[in-house]
Image (cartoon, rainbow over all chains, first blue to last red):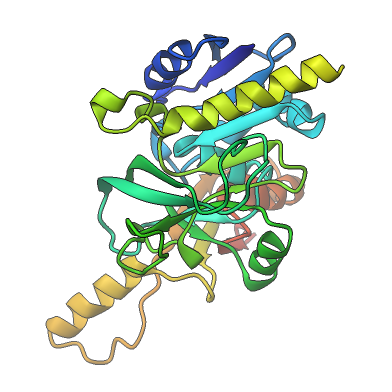
Length: 235
Length: 80
């Protein structure tokens, strides 16, 4: 399966993503420059972390208007799998593909740490084979990762089971102390209503190698791969 | 001819930066600072007729210059 990694000026986790994805058997991956206008032929789209356009104006606010984003939005609406990590999550929110927004960490500090997240919904294209309550250890590195949504949006996200990951402690409890950035209801990652677009602040791309601290991130990409493979088999 | 755009965080959105600045002001003896909200201020030098530019500028305020999920904006067009 072919995964496109979109490079914006200021992306800096594109190489992490490429290394992570190429380490998974069955995934082919290449960069796609943000000036491109089509993503035809790609099975999945990755918006990597970084500081697109220097985070000017707001994180993701300018990248959201890059030429490639029209293709990302069209393909997302057509059901293609899209994952946005960190700055990629911010871009997806700015583009309106995901609801809510990421604002300045409540502590005002840039957080760079290993966190634990809890899988809230199983059998999505991103959490396939991970029962509810599965704990994933993933690194975070961001200054604007505090997830915010208004009350109505939050209710809808919960009712439609669109919150896929929450920050928690080692026992799986979503405590205030385990929330690295002040995100509302410890939200670490959400998907869209159709469940084909996923955004998260933690970096699965930096957790694909047990020797480097955690291999849990690979499970998310493997889940995407399995979803694509079973879709293709069914077609 | 300058248009001015003032973007502020919505009332419902926590503004930790503003809170930190308020604390510093109080620390410096300015007890009258009850709340501080930090936003963004843009000056846009316009070419041609401001009235003609206004509709598109208003659209950009909503789509680019502010994020309606977390921010409000105020657009001030140049006085004739």
